[in-house]
Length: 324
Image (cartoon, rainbow, N blue to C red; front, side, top):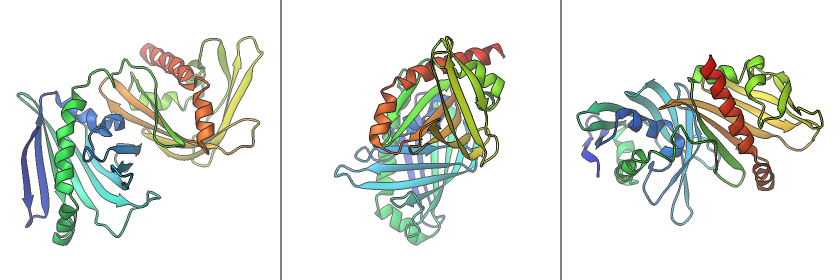
């Protein structure tokens, strides 16, 4: 158990937890920056978490839900107020309803996470600020303290895992629910570099070509919310061609972009693609959360070997960034 101190201060309306870990502070920080790691410890062991959004940047949000042993689902959200890399995260934390909308019937709170190096590794300190004594009593009665203890006790096994989320791993696809999948890849480069690589047509046409033997003759990029984009690919021998088009719904450079996506020439419903870029050890964690209109379409697209083509493109992108 890494927890060394738990202090509840009713006068200051705070709950403080201190935990020590035998790993460098950078690795502990990445446990919070990477949703794949965060899901493995956030919340009690009996209530595993799933993060469907995690743009860890000032003004950004995280959306998550925890599923109990009987299938009960509890939903929450974070809004990031301030971030000092490898040192501090300030956020607002609250409950959400089944649609992900903040639940005004339950209190929200402000949380500060502090990270520091120690002689034996790193120390994590969490300070929760409650809006009132009534809110503090309500949340403690709901099991908040036990949940935090359980969460902190699970981090050791996550930060000790050096292979599952290593930068050397290729593109991963994780099913989040019946219609949503998260594509993840650590790209060797900064978020600014990776963002530019997704928004400069000439650069995109050099790396976003999938498996060898394909080109990208059409690359019309959307740069302003409401703009439409159009991408087309063609085989080198000219016998095959396909493309996608859609609309830019959100853009927060260099951290998050949301688009719709539909195959050119089809009239079916579009997917919703949420691109998030977060700095981690080894480069930038690129995540794309794709929401499909149906489970059947999700499974069909994944069955085409989509991630294999994406991995070829990301490998090419790293070569471009390395040359730059």
